[in-house]
Image (tube, rainbow, N blue to C red; front, side):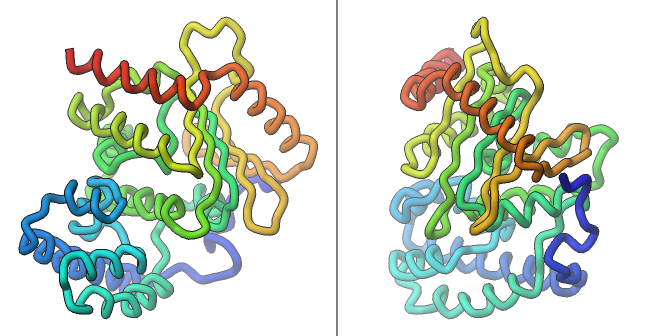
Length: 295
């Protein structure tokens, strides 16, 4: 078992300097402004651009505001679609160079997990009080950090939001990891951030649930037997390495690498998935919840 994170954030690499981190943020903002200008010139909304490129509206919004680092594939596709004449494609090297120098800052207790997640080939979540960070919209993430007690300052909130949005890029990389998640029904009934943000989050889950690499399941609240009463956990398989377990309670993180402990978590997760609704049933339930919220 690994009891806690290494302060360096993993692999012996030094933390990025403030100048390097700020440099990436400034570059993201500059590229985002270019995307917005070109999009508006083409007469497209963020949703329309996202639909044509195969990305969500939330992602396009985050990119335009510089809160997320654009992937090379996005820059290539957006350049062609918006008739940028190579303007966006020309930024790929600068973005890659800046990203290599700067690592998004995660809380110290979370850095080990974030490093493993970034290289994962498979991630499995069981969540009983919130939606997995990889599935959260920016509005929901921001609302969660704004309600945190004790209060976080604005700079910390912005950094944490950017970090979570940056993590989500593993869902659109190639090859993407296989991701499964079981979420308690009650989590989807809590309108974190208000009803508009909640509806946006449900829409996002429906989109993610359609991906070939994502299997989303809902655990009904009225289920009499439940193997997950011990609390939430994550099972993660890094590239070329054994599966590990991860638990997090009140900002205290723990990576489990003991073979027997991980095997127990894996068996428990199998039971949880068997007790939950199927992926198809789960998406149908989310659609019904959307309709109920509208009324």
